[in-house]
Image 1 (cartoon, rainbow, N blue to C red):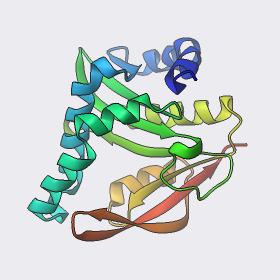
Image 2 (cartoon, rainbow, N blue to C red; image 1 turned 180 degrees about the vertical axis):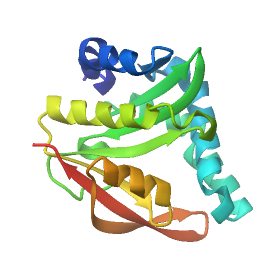
Image 3 (cartoon, one colour; image 1 turned 30 degrees about the horizontal axis):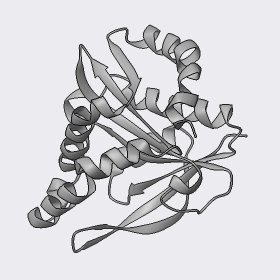
Length: 196
């Protein structure tokens, strides 16, 4: 089976990247391959720490980062044919990443015919450049191309900036689940947007 990213490439080589170039010609969004693993691991660990370190026990954070974003685990995710990850670069520097899942790669089977945005993170120093909006457009383009009816994601209940951002993109709460960081049980709101 082909990697989902390979199926995904033509959409953005012609349709999306051209639009994004008009927004900010210095930023490139690329499908992540195994040779970009170091950049991906850096972004995963750094952005998660930036987002949650103030509200998470230091030891819980250390364990979570080591286990969730190990090279072995991320390599397996990149090899999954039902997932695709994108990295945004500016002048060769990684700024943020997006991970999409379909089918059995979704972390929960809560909706039919759906696309999951499992992770969307941007370095604090890179926010405000339109990268988040570009990532959201990638997700919508993919869902439309694959005739998927819904996009869904999870967001921490206390992450007000993220909740506001998703609301501005048309996402609405439909459920919640528990997100575990070490011994810390946190609540994520599940949000969705109908595409078709």
